[in-house]
Amino acid sequence: MTLVWKITSAATSAIVICGVAVLWSAHKERAAERKLADAAREYRVRAERGDTKAQYALGNLYRKGKGVPQSYSEAARWWCKAAHEGDAKAQNNLAVLYQRGQGVPPDFAEAVRWYRKAAEQGYANAQHGLGFMYEQGQGVPQDYAQAVRWYGKAADQGFATAQYCLGNMYRLGKGVPQDYAEAFRWWRMAADHGSAEAQCGLGFMYREGLGVPRDYGEAVRWYRKAAEQGVPQAQRALDSMGAGSNTRRRILYVYLSIMFLVSLCLSISFLLPGKSLQDWRQKAMTLLGISGMSVAGLSLYGIAHTEMGHPMCSNARYPALAGPVIVIAFVAYITARSRKRARP
Image 1 (cartoon, helix red, strand yellow):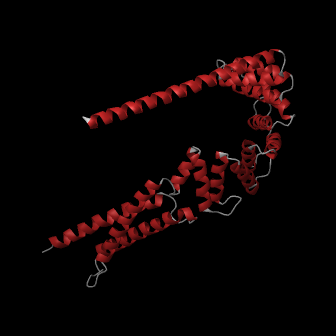
Image 2: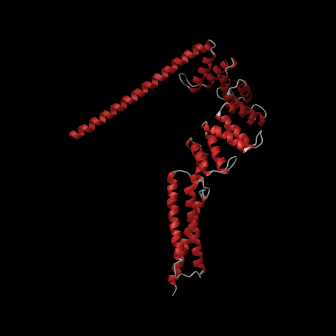
């Protein structure tokens, strides 16, 4: 009875604690919502009096749906007021809405107009946006040189997305002579600022030896950084290099180790003293065994050295070759032994 009472008391206490935690969390959420609603009311009063900063802030609340119902059209209305007063951030955000057709009819020409106004004030986000419009030919004639110009202005301010785009222009030779070293330089800056796309790009550059000496270890390092941010191409690249998940690597190690030992035994069985290699079947079995052992051994060596920058057998296709080679050799070996025993 005492044990039952203790268990019941512990369970009740746990339920009470969880209930209090849930209620406290809900209270904090409601308090935060009330605070945002109060801020929205205050911003609205100031915005209606012509306060540009309040108009921009109120537009942000409408875009995110914080303190007010989410509404792109209301965000556009308030940003438009601030944009006409020369607020660069509002001009950029309004351009984004026109580009995406959110809260306003899609209009690339209008997006370019507002991007340009903000970009000419030195706002890096807008400079990148204007560069993108020139690169894609949206709202303006396609002009890679102009795209490079505006990407460069934003990149010089440390805007990571623009640094990545500028590096890509150098990699592809769009608007500038193709220059892998310059592409690598800009991608490295963007990667250091946390750009997942640039990190994936650096992995590619190191893997292929473009603009930098080939280094598989560095390729794996940068691919892994990008994969941790959810870039699927980076994860696929890691898998193809044999540097994917640790579980997969362990399974591959075990598989190749077994294949190596089987093929080793198969080879030795025909090389023992007293064995003759006059029969073509025996020669073939020995050759297959040695081949399987070589493939498995080289694959093990390559996987072990992949993260240290060794290129040998880093592609996952090569370890897979060991299995078929050894299976064929083993089946042929059993067949040869069976026929030998069947002879009178």
